[in-house]
Length: 75
Image (cartoon, rainbow, N blue to C red):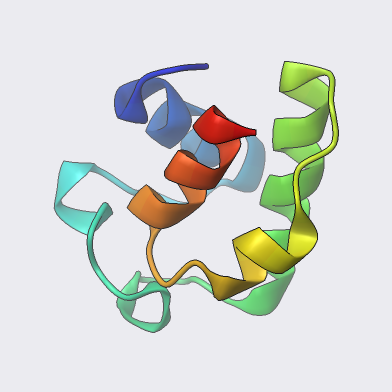
């Protein structure tokens, strides 16, 4: 999963949130339906997909889906 489009597909498939490109740079608190439980479920799904741990502190500091994606790609 290297592209932001793949990342959005994972969120839709694994988390069940209807997110699209218009939500990528939106603050997480404004993403429709987003809550902290989605963050934990997303982190678990991402680690399962990429096969390695992701820095929880870095993800917690991310303020948008795009920033979470950047953390995942650079990890």
